[in-house]
Length: 245
Length: 328
Image (cartoon, rainbow over all chains, first blue to last red; front, side, top):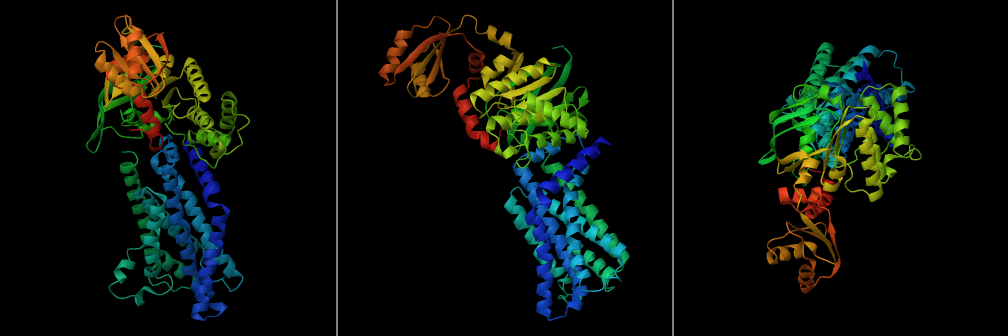
C-alpha cells in the first residue's frame, strides 16, 4: 500500500506545479473556444451545429492538453535531474510512469469537458451516451498521454520535446477525421489515418454524441485500448534501456 | 563500525561506447563505516554510485547491498539507501519543507511522519527560517544541505554522498562535513565520493583511490598515512604559476617530488630534510616571489599524489569546471 503514497504524491505535485498553473488552465479554456469559433465562422453554420463540431473540438482539446505538456514536463525534470529522484524511489517503474502520466491524463479529460460545458448552454445534449463519451475521452487522453511519454523518452531537450510533439500533432489533426471524414482524404493517405489512435477516439466520440461514427464502437474502444498498451510498453522499454542503462 | 560487510562489489565493469568508465573493481564497505571513494573527474565515481543504487546496470560483475543482489532487485536495495547526487536536484518550484515531504512520500512515509521528520531535519540543518522559501531561491550551501536532508528523510541505513561539498562556500562545506560526521556517528554507513582529499582524510576511516575506472589503492587512512613516515614536506606560497614552477623544480632538483596544491601553493616532498634556501633562490630566479615557506605534516593528499601521480590542484580545477556538466 505504501507505493500508493508515492503514486498519489507524484500525481498531486505534478497537478499543482505543472497542470493547474493559470497559463495551462487558460490554454484549456481558450483553445477549444478558438477552434470551435473558427469552424463556426468558416463554415457559416449556425449555433445549432455546435453539436456536430463537438467531437472534433473535444479531441483537439485532449490531444493538445496531453502530448506536449507531458513530454515537456518529463524532459524538464530529466534536464534538471530531479527525475533521478523518482528513478531512485523504491517504487516499480510501471507505477512511477503511471503516476507521472496520470496528471496529464486528468488534465486532458478535464480539457475535453470544457467544450461540453460550453455547448450545454447552446444546444440540447440530452441524447449523448455519456458512459461511452466518458470512456472514449479517457482512452483518447490515455493514448495521447502515452504518445507524449514516448516523445519524452525519445528526446533530451525541452525544445526537442515541443518540436517533436508538433511533428505528430499537426498531421494528426488532418488525418484522424477530426473536422472532416477520413473518406474524403486522398485514398493513398487513408491507411495512415488508421494507424493513428485519435482516429478511433474521434470516431467513438462521434458515435456517442451524434451516432455518426463509421467504425463499430467496440472496435474503436478495443483498438484505442490496444494503442494505450502498446505505447506504454514501448515507452517503458525505452525508459529501461535509455534511462537506467 | 563492525566487520560485517554491507556493500560487496566484485568485478564491476561499465562501458559507455569505447570508454571503460569502471573497469573490474572489487571492494567491500562495512556496516557503520564512512568509506571514501577518491579520484579525479571522470575516474568512475558517479558511475559506480549509479550502479550501486540501481540507476545504472553494470556490464559485468556483482553488487550486493545488505545481502540483496542489486542487479536483480534494485528496488529492494533502493529502500535501504539514501542518495545525495553531485548536483542539488530537488524541485525548484517547491519550498524546502515541501521538497522534503515529497521525498519522504516517495519512500511511502505517512503524512504525519514525513512532516515531523522534515521539520526535525530543517531544524538540525539550520534551515528552519528558510523552510517555506522556494528551493530555487536558496543559496548553493542551503541547497546542498536540503539535498542531504532529502537523502536521509527516510532514515536509510546506507547513504551515498556524491561530492557533497563541491562548489559551495567554506562555511557551508564545514557545516556539511560536521553533519556527515554526526550522521556516521549515529550509525549510518556512508559511501562518500570526493576529490577533496583532505575532506576524506578527516572524515573517512577507509578510502579507495580510483583512477580511470580502476581502484589503484584501498586501505585505512591510518595505514596509508604510514607511507608518509620519514617523509619531509615543505609548502611554498608563491605569487603565481605554481604548476610551472613545479615542473622547473622537478627538473632542477631530481631528488624531490613537487606538486601544485593550487595556482599559488606548491608542495615539495623529500625523503631527506628539505633545504629551503636553494629552492627559494631557484624560484626567485624564475621570476616568482616566495611569500611563505613552511614545514608541514605529510597528508593523505601526499599519499594520493604519490600513488596516482595526479596533481590535486588540477583535479580540483577540473572538477569545478565540470560541475555544470556533472561527473562521469
